[in-house]
Amino acid sequence: MEPLLLIDTASPTTTVALRLQDRIFSESTRQHRQAAQQVLPLVDKILASHGVKIKDLGAIGVVNGPGSFTGMRIGVAVTQGLSRAAGVPAIPVSSLAVMALSAANQNSARHWLVAMPARDDEHYIAAFRVDQDGQLSTLLTEQLLGVADLPEVSEKLPKAEDWSAAGSSFAQADVLSRLSVELNCKLPELPMALPAVFELLANKLASKQEFKPEQALPNYVKEQMDYS
Image 1 (cartoon, rainbow, N blue to C red):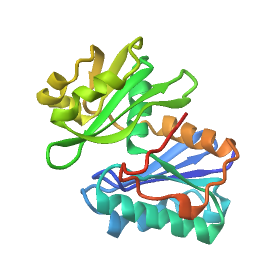
Image 2 (image 1 turned 90 degrees about the vertical axis):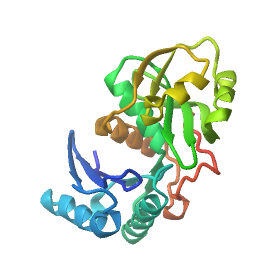
Image 3 (image 1 turned 45 degrees about the horizontal axis):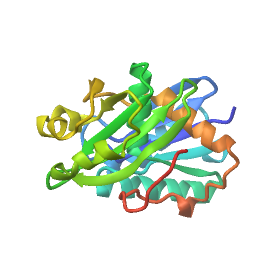
């Protein structure tokens, strides 16, 4: 099993994680918005601590948004540079997909409506199915909606499924009131489940797709990503 590296600068706190055999190690900044200053030192630190060189990696995963515009651009740029220099695949992972995996890691529900606040009273929103083996499929593609447009979501979801919700948007009463979806549970705050995210990276790497560095781009939710 080749080592896998994960870079997340799309979140307020920058995190770099390494999966080495069956163990996961991580380093994070203590302060918010420190990606530009800290991401490369964190990468150097975690690799050096475990005797891993960039060229030894099986792939570099990057959480490419949606999220902080500046943060995700930094993470993508660093990932592209490292990937190109070492000749290893660069695999982008959606922030919303990470939320769905992290929620499923805490709760046995399989159908997840995930959302996070954007700007100007808007929200990034998507829906996924997470199977017991960690396979992820998209049920509602990522989109940016204002609160007034959230009723559209209810109309687009598969009607026969039981739904749960994850993400900080669901801590807001106006979001919940606009959705005519009965939710089994709500997880407004949840830490990233690194084992589940690394499993997603491993599955994508095993698919034999070609993950070129120039294809790892910031996800502004203008071009949709499909995990099915």
